[in-house]
Amino acid sequence: MFIKAGATNMTGNDDLRALVRTIPDYPKPGIQFRDVSTLLLDGPAFRRTIDRMIALVDPDSFDLIAGIEARGFIVSAAMSYALEKGKIMLRKPGKLPGKSVFIDYALEYGSDRIEMHVDAIRPGQRVLLVDDLIATGGTAMAGVQLLRGQGAIVERALFIVDLPDLGGARKLAAAGVTPTSLMAFAGD
Ligand code: AMP
Image (cartoon, rainbow, N blue to C red; front, side):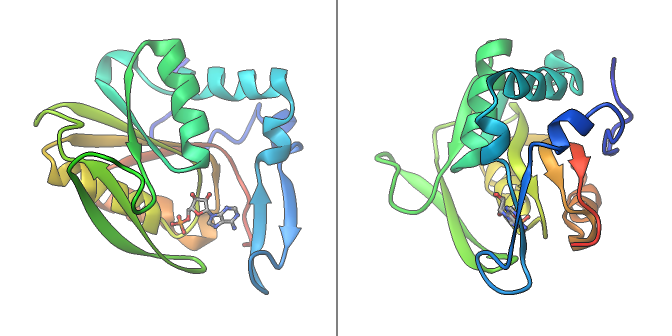
């Protein structure tokens, strides 16, 4: 079944939502950290997470999956394995051995940089962007810009968790990328 693009599939994922732990005031006061490590500890629940993310997309609509370091790698690797799609690593600074491009971006709590190999994609390849969580959207937007800068077509992004009050999903939609997540935590 395909869920309406751009939606958070709120119903049916309460089992997974219950496994996401909330840590108040991490990494700084006022931030409610939605910790998926507790969901990852539950093997069958992780499998359901990946199965449900896969059910949200048409595998024929993309060529590669891009995951954002580090929790995004967990999602992208599992989806890549199941769908037999190649994956692109969007990495923290200084980790990639080959010629790379980077982009700096603002976080909910600070700033960061991600990098990718310049030869990771061929222009015109369609890339699905995945991460564990979208908050302000700064990280995902940086990924989109980095990928598009290398000629990728990026039209869909998938997340386990959306924090809708922080506006990241809206930012992606405004940039022509349809975001979908399995659950939302409103009020953050
Ligand atoms: P953002 O760029 O603001 O959308 O932040 C997204 C990235 O930072 C994701 O890779 C998340 O893993 C992490 N992140 C940001 N805010 C939170 C939060 N409140 N709880 C858990 N992870 C977060």
